[in-house]
Length: 308
Length: 295
Image (tube, rainbow over all chains, first blue to last red; front, top):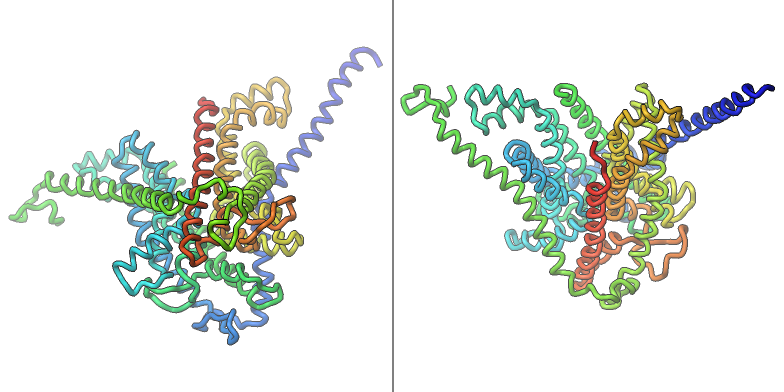
């Protein structure tokens, strides 16, 4: 081996080592990315396994049509409708606050506020979204409910309305932030065209910007509903543990999430039917939120395609 | 014909002053929406401080929970939160950053990449209590870790992973392409480029995202209740397989007790929790402003 060959081989050999090392690193990083796939699969597998066991003992027809939910009592009834009723009641109430206020806040931030005001107000509003939900639960139970009882004396100590109101304000920043993103993505030329036709700022906002941003705003709304349905601690603390079919928000109800918390707090043996119910309820919750999230993602992608 | 644009004779008239007045009204209305949100936030914070400040004594931090409010404290909750957050960060940080690197630097635009991205987007929207059921089935029962702080941290790591990946990707994407080209042109391999040039510049952004993810984990309650974290722990936490409780669970426990004193203890616990979150967020803002390089 002459001198030049020797130099060449020491330069080239690490190259092969490097290649192997690079391949290993790439494979490890790919594995880390795949954790998200395993998580999804894990969720589906765990929920499905116990749900199948649950439906071996309870008919699926009873689950969706029976109007009583009493798995923890001596006379067991497995109708999920009262839990769905409670969930939808609270979520609908929250949306009465979060959607209009969130959209108005987004309009203010996107169309009216100066740059300085926006830089100050947006993070301030987002603090609302960063407050832990257990804190909101405390606030609903110890501040909002007594207030409601002064207005409507028949309000129960645990009630759907206080949870709704507080949840509405918790979700407001989510609606505001996502809707503002959608409105900011509307090209300036559309606004200028409307102004050129003699529209006022209000008319530009309501008849040009909002319609143009509609798919993004709808995506925000759907995500907000999904968030409200999956929210747990506020309802577990403030809305009660009485599954019933009612539209009266002043009464104590129980949501799907609050039921899972209720069972988890008790010491439920793994083989018992009560243990399996939380997975069946969880499965229903997972499917409901998954469908909404998929629709929301799809709509967000659509407005991005139109304007970016 | 729109009535807004007609005068009393039904003839066209721009009626600009009326339309502008509507505009000003609407502007006030939308400003009111923002203000209302901020008012609720202020009332919430004020209410909690007034309810709980009396209980913020040194004993409150050093005592275990107790049947007697005056003997109750956050000792086990603080220990549990500290353990949980450390273990969560230890597991979630390398996986989250690794996944972000893969998706930004390595992944080609194929079905696998798209599938991973859809998964991450959807996982970010899965209710946290579902993660609790996953942890219960997979870690507590499946791996037989029991109701340990390790099982709780693994659950929490999966929960915050989407946040970490998304913020990590943004930080990596912000590093200019020219830096990579320069490094590659000097003969560095892809990983050398990432390790020595991309990651150092992306690190402030990655750390900011990590802190935000951790503040989410500190405040989460529902998944830990589902995996069976206990509310009444009267011993020091010694290892990752010990039973545990955390701040929000201790608060939840006190909220659900009927005595008024326990409600005030809950408020005091909330003050501590909010103070921790506030300092974490302040740290994230400082990191972002001081360390981030603007290109």
